[in-house]
Length: 598
Image (tube, rainbow, N blue to C red; front, top):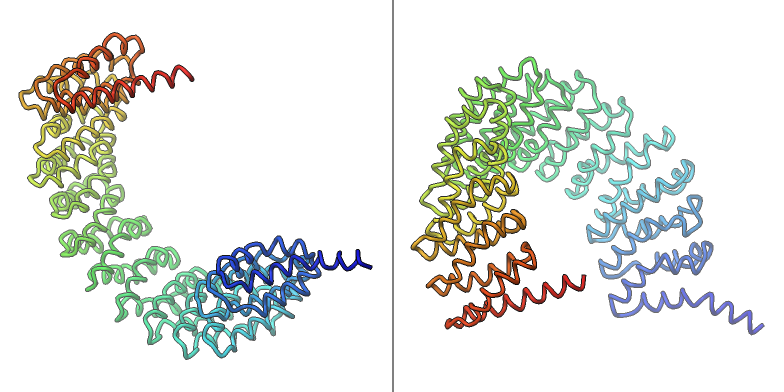
């Protein structure tokens, strides 16, 4: 008897610990307890999880939001722990309660878990258990339950009988007409998802009237969500029905009094275009696109400007060039000189993509003048967006035409009086070099890159040094040996000590990409030569450089040439030179020891 009692006590222990921790004043303890629910459920077994754990959790849903969020998440994966799909209905009460709480994140997670659990029910159990849960949420007094209900229709609808489907459509209509804007917003948000599972006849008779009503709602937050639903509905209907049932509302949204609604139309424009097809696009969407391109709000113009390339690419190929030239480019020209930098930047990021569509002649005639204006724009982001897409134009008009038109503007920017402008060009130079090729780079741009090494601004010299490394990564060490290393080594003899320092900085980074042979043969002798420089700053940078390049040198070279030089620097009269020399000696010794151990 005593043994039996002990067994009962042991079996009750996990639930007792859980209850204690869930009632603990420490939020973290309660949270940890919730995260261990699956372990506790396994200890209790399926039957006791259903009869004790789930009811207990349902009764105690009153806690901090992070605890409730963890609970909602856990319950979504609990079906196997209560005995499988035939017992999944036991999870509905706690999730239903969680779906009504005030905190949005908790409700959303509860709905996500409810959808998961609902999908695991059989069709019969879905009607008996899940649909009543949905109906209770729909008729809840608080808006929180009604907003949560909106997320469950698309899961339930495909698997229930026709009479229940009719009820669900009626319930959804009720939510679309709810007096609370938050509920109508939730309904508008889920309308497209619900439309995908509703039969076409009921889509036309029931859901499209709801869609039209939501698109005319007095709250712009509801109307803008109706735009998203518009895409889904247009994809589901034949072209004739789209023209009669959807387009009038779409036209109305494109000219809505709220800029946020127009912004959403701009964001979804290409999706809408693909949904409605080429003919409706030509007749209806091109004028709407033009309207948005000259919108009064900069946010709308910027959003639609980013869609210019994709919109044009999706036009009917038979009329594509003609539509772009006659209907899109005139508006694009206005955006090139838009007063808002974000609009100009958005356009610059995509405008080069029109070149392959228009071909070489029209690119030269129509687009190149626009590119030149953008390359001289005062906003650096606009200029960089143009430079970063030069390969699109290069493929269409060829390097020769490009060099005659756009390159002079790039060179002009590279020599701009504002150092930040020069810096922006330097940072993009490796990518530009990759697009234009080694031969063209050597002819037109290499001199610029070398000139930056002598710039009077340190940030430019530093960026130019890193630029050299990236160019060598792009074109290879043999190119560096022939094209740039001789010019860099000449700087070591410059009268200005800053130029000699820049030479050292270049040798620092080039050793990493040029390899042992070039470093030993070309770079090291110049570094050793500068060890006798009259300027202390140069000498201590020699010590730092020797430590930096030593991993790329043979041990015999380090012993014969590097160490004696460092020893001399370690005896220098300048304190800083001695300090860095000693640091370099210790660093090389440590590296040698480490390599020896390996």
